[in-house]
Structures are given as structure tokens and as C-alpha cells.
Length: 152
Ligand SMILES: [Cu+2]
Image 1 (cartoon, rainbow, N blue to C red):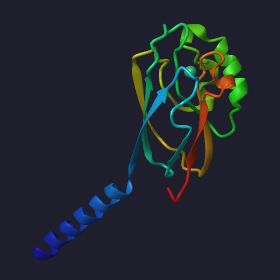
Image 2: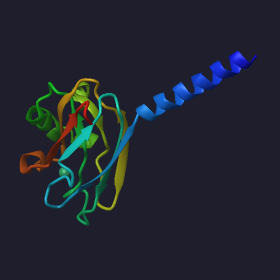
Image 3: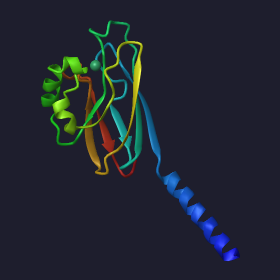
Image 4: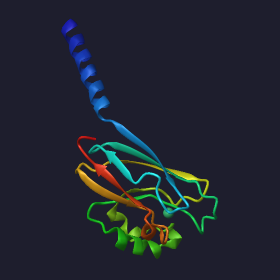
């Protein structure tokens, strides 16, 4: 009986440390009227649970200044993706035909609003680009890089 209790306690301790190792990363990113993300570089661990909150602080109408946050797979071309997005106005500038090139994305956010997305970071270390696909914003520099790194 005592032996069994010891085993259960040991299993609990191991279980807890496994949970602690599975860290989570939370970022709040603002989209600005200057067509920039307030954070242009994020670093996370492979397989980490990542939460991105995109806040649009603009007071301009949504037709003029909406933002989204789209994280692309490593082999996706941001410029080609962006050109397809431009033609997807009725879908919030999210080109559904290219959704297989996307790791995670927020909705298109109007001024004064926000949207949050949670996803699992890629297992493969490397750089992954994120963009805003509202027409003209990527070309103006509204982009950034999420680095997946074991050294975190
Ligand atoms: Cu934008």
C-alpha cells in the first residue's frame, strides 16, 4: 500500500514538471496608423502554446484602417499571398484558397477593437513571417518575424 502511494506521488510530481515545461507565450501587438505592428519580432519555443492579441488603436473608419495578423508557413511567399488577399475583400482580405499557407491568423480588426488567436508554434526552429493583409499595408512595412528557437 505504501509502495503504491509513493508511486502515485512520484507520478504526480513528474506530471507537474511536464506541465511546467510546456510554457505559454502571450503577446499583445498593436496595429498603428503608421502601418506598423508595435512588435516586429517575437521569439517562442518549438511547440509552445502562443496567444496573440491584436489591438487596433486607430480612430479611422474600418474601410480606411483595419488590420489583421497572419502568420505564414516558412515556404509561403508573403507578397504572392498579399496579392491574393487584395482580391478577397468580402472575406476580410483573407484569401481562403491560400489558407493552407497559414499557421494562424486573427480576424480583420477595425479601430477600437481587438481579436485574439491561440495556436501551437511550429516544431521546426526557424523564422516565420507575419503580415497584415489589408491592401497596401504589407508593402508599407506592416510585417514581422516570429522566430522559433530552442533557446527560447
Ligand atoms: Cu494593417
